[in-house]
Length: 467
Image 1 (cartoon, rainbow, N blue to C red):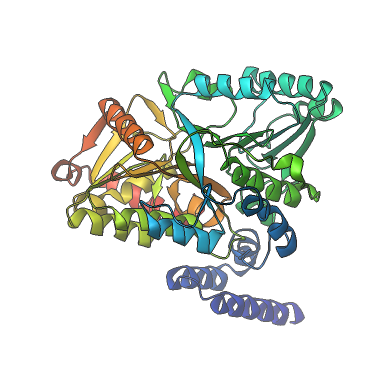
Image 2 (image 1 turned 90 degrees about the vertical axis):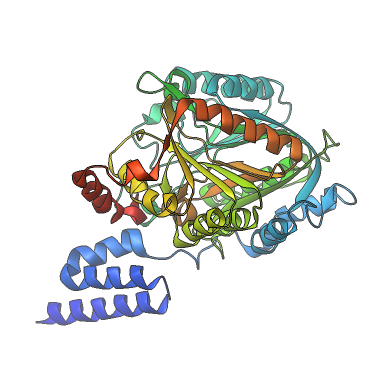
């Protein structure tokens, strides 16, 4: 009898907490139903996957302020802009909700294949004199991973500080000797949010999906590429199509800050100092704003940013994402833009890289945007892993954020927002070139696909928040 009373009290308390969080009513009701009908499993599932982390912080307010203060201290005058002139709304929003500065005087190079990116990154690492900071979602022990590990060990022996962080769950199957070899040779290696038993930890649902490299505080990389052979060799006989950018100039200081905040959380070590924030002379004329997002942030940063870009587009907005499981706000923004005459295009892969649920769930949303006039393309040359958006020949974003609920609400992500016409035109050209390897989906044909296919897609959509 006592156990029954305890269970009722626990369930009542859990339901009260869920209600008081003021989440989306659909999610709240879903959790209440789960707790009511399968109470034991429901409580475990809520602890592992449902509890909000909004009250937690990656770093204390004081330490965050100390790291961020390096940017305005180093870049006053023309380098540090209050607003980017071509998209004042977006730049103001990111400054308000993410404390992200718009920085002028940068150069930027885009990579759409892994090998050129990896070669460029290794070249920059070879030139490192002071420190190398690396964070990747996936870092596997294969010919590619070992090539990077060997070079990092070589740089440590040459007197360079090397710090490496990786997502623990994403790399759980990687043999620990791979990381231990680097540690034994002086590389500081730490997993982000260590999970000793996969999927049985509160941390398992909050993944660090960022891809970051910073060399001497002068050169930085962000985007969608991880470190493994398959990104070089391709998948299913086709290429692995992805996007990464190399940034040189003042904006690297913001990429550095993103890494050091994650490093503080993962290792417990607070790293700062002028050696990590050198004053970078102008390397070009590109204005860049670096923004980060995650489950511990006050706001869903990328959700706000993407809605802003789509809703303020006047001529076109082209989107690439490996998954399309949008929030209601992004879905409505795309529909509204398309119905107002904006050329809205979405490109997603025809097949997933692993598992059947994500691609099925993605397809369940296409009816809603196709009917509104959004043009949809299935990339067929291999696998599209690119996470980009470009609008009106003025603005583009490249980063780690997918158009899916997990990326937008649960993962730790980073994106570069580039306010530059030349770069935007380059990204537009890349999208149009990719259309040659893609097939457009036409609504009048799509609506006649087999009923069994529609049933599979609708069923997969039920699991959208966990995919």
